[in-house]
Length: 283
Image (cartoon, rainbow, N blue to C red; front, top):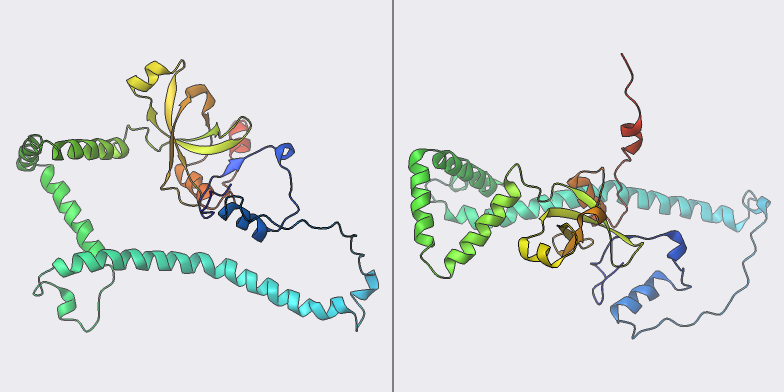
């Protein structure tokens, strides 16, 4: 379901087939209708008589039109097959290269020229900035694990706690990071199915934790926090407070759920229910 006026974002919904009404408009007219918020409406089409199918022997006739279109159709199929093969690889390489370039452009200039390997080499080293960041984080983690490191971190937190505005920002960011990365956290650990935006219309969400006290006191049932991502950009979405019994757990990983949301439902994970339902074979 595309958003308006930007149809490149939206929601992935699972709706009963009986509730879907097909429209006699093209995809292009539908996109125009969404972008214009209903201002640009498609022209009314006149009912046309169904085209007659060519006789069966026309496909094999040496002078038949269908036979002349055969090579064109094959070339078209080869073209789309080439896109299906090369697009995932090309997009993955492009995204990786852009991320490496983004990090390198901001980290490599901070290296002193005497320590920069690119100063002595006739070529650049892609990924040098990422390697330095990973090494830096490992060193910081190793240093913080010691007594001296924990003491310095505690001193820094006490200093930040005395700053009126910065302490609020630091406390919120620290709580968010600790909640997401700690092992016992439920944040983004479970994929669920919820009814949205109406009954019998389903959407994929991710449980981020139990509802806080203020929200829970205002809701009559036991409530959980569910992040509902948009399609194809799962970094944006909505925070919903859903009754726990209405959030149906799915037998898929978070990675598989994100792939399904990003692809708009094209990439679907395998069904594991049949394997789980099979009784174990006695040895």
